[in-house]
Length: 170
Image 1 (tube, rainbow, N blue to C red):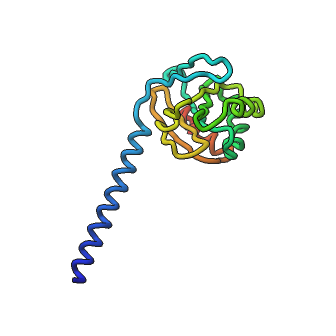
Image 2: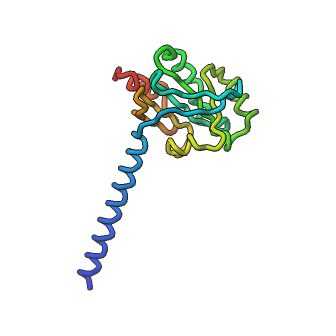
Image 3: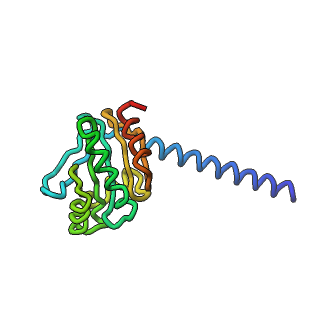
């Protein structure tokens, strides 16, 4: 009986490890998948904006106005956009189905965001990029490959390291 318990326990452990490896592999492949473009409405103009990854390396800053970590990261993103705007496209992506337009407008004004803020009204872009929390920063090269992905609050130096990695400077 003791031998059967050991075999059963071992089998369960091996199956659990296999499942974790498979899910991790699937998630990594999803993040490294090729992307062509994103098309969303821009907050200030209402016009449809197509994010063309081939034009320049691109950083997608996915946020909500009510997220305290997003509010802490916003000034960092504004400063990094100013520093790298000639070499990297930065887009704010607001998950609008979890936010209020008036609050998003206040957020953009408060943080003096000058890069385009696009409205992910259904949450599809957020879900595609993992949907694991806020803020989410996605670094996409000109081949449409995600080369880095950050969820949560980091200091400006850590975020800038990902900007440099995107440019091949690290």
